[in-house]
Length: 374
Picture 1 (cartoon, one colour):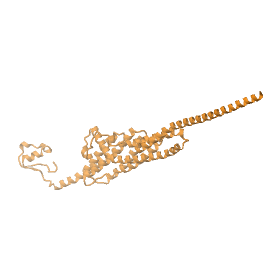
Picture 2 (tube, helix red, strand yellow):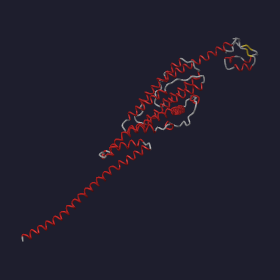
Picture 3 (cartoon, helix red, strand yellow):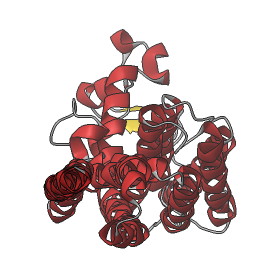
Picture 4 (cartoon, helix red, strand yellow):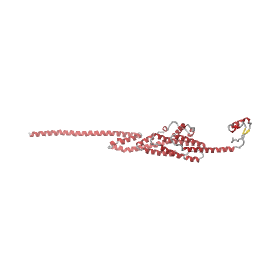
């Protein structure tokens, strides 16, 4: 009986061992499958995190290739602060993160080039913009200044404004890019430094009084048109941007212009010029003051220069006619004026000769007047 019980126990043990082996195999297989599922889930999750990053990076490359730098700099910000931090443990994410500062620097360098190109363009367009503004001011003020003679030419379209002459998109784009990367103030300083250099060249005033009045008038008109165009552009940026151009920066440039123009006083004192050229310069300066006065600039300091120009004009006119009168008086023989006919008498009527009684006049008649002193 005992032997039979031992045999049964051995059989049960053998059966349990066989079944346990199968269970252990199933258990290991289950563990392996669950691990695979976990890895698959982790991989799927990683892919879900990585795909948007790769898509954004690809979009960044496309925007850089298409020169859409404003969009590219915004994408860089999203990559740096939103997309890359969750996958920072991956090596390719570290490589991308290392490229971000280099890409940002590249965009900044390109923006600087765009700024230089824009500054070159506005220097070339300033004269046309100023000419247009002065014509518009003339029409608004309805003055009797002979503007065709003073400015020398008409603009293509008087109704056009600065935005019609010049594409301001590059400067707006550069400003937005520097604002996004937090360097707006640096960009504004760079812009003002470059404009200051342009102002030093544009404002240097040497009025030209040559032998040809047309040449002198053209030179002076070009100068004042360039100055007007310079400040019209600044005024446009003042009202279309935030913080790039301020009233303070414009006042600094205006004071620089006034200091350059102040040299004209001494120049006028040392030159003997033709009255018509001085009159043309005075009228040009009047139109200049009217135009920039409409752009919120204080032109009162120029009135002294206008007074000096007027005095110089009077002195020059007096000097010119003084010599002519001397010539006339030098040729006169100071004899009484003799009238031989009624026709000659009619030519003298309207002056002091109205007092002459024509009814009793017999020709020839001798008058008690000189030819040069009626």
